[in-house]
Image 1 (tube, rainbow, N blue to C red):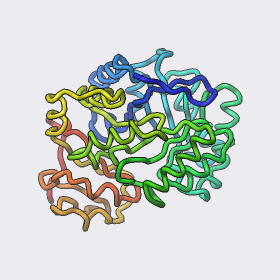
Image 2: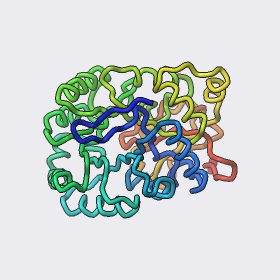
Image 3: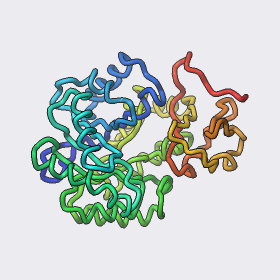
Length: 328
């Protein structure tokens, strides 16, 4: 596994970062022992960087697997808007992860320059915490080209997560080409660029997952790629793609044929944008929120990119016993 040093911070992140949203209680609901084993397997394969946030509900899984392990790098994030809110979030993160200092801490999901301005207090705290040695590296996470451009102008920002994939899906305000221009500015400014949503929340996983991951791993403006994983096979394949190695025919077939499940998270705002786009009528509204009839879903991936809240994901099917949504 190759590693990238984040600016002048000394923090070294693996080219493949492990996104933990999918494995937590919001999605795959992996039992703690199974999750810990999977995380340890990833570490053994060379993945030293793990991405989380309070909203992901996965910090406890990371703490169980990696308590007191100095070789593990954790990227954490906060949606806080004020100095006091993010101060509490950082403290909460350190307690839940059982760490004395944070490796990388980001403002989560910054959506515009105006949004960043409203969160200036939170950014001020991150800068102070870095100066005090409480956080090693700071930055932003965004789905916005405008914010990626802004991050290039922030001298204190070390690490920037940007939504970037072969289709340009999930961007709030432009095209893939425009995001590439913003990423070029980030690189010129010395920022470490981490591609998030390389599979567009799993929406490219049915037919194009290998092509999509090869695109981001081989892109010259991408330093590291954050991918959600819940199986050993995904870890094996993604590590191979990160190293530009050839996948075995058996592994390629297994992942291509792997059953999947559509998940709509609880931050759905009920806008109904996904309902008319579904070609199999698998989506419907119930009590003001979008729901899915799993038996009708053909995993086409059309719904995810139109969700303004990025609340729709396509993940490997969960273990037997987890309830599926049924038509009412």
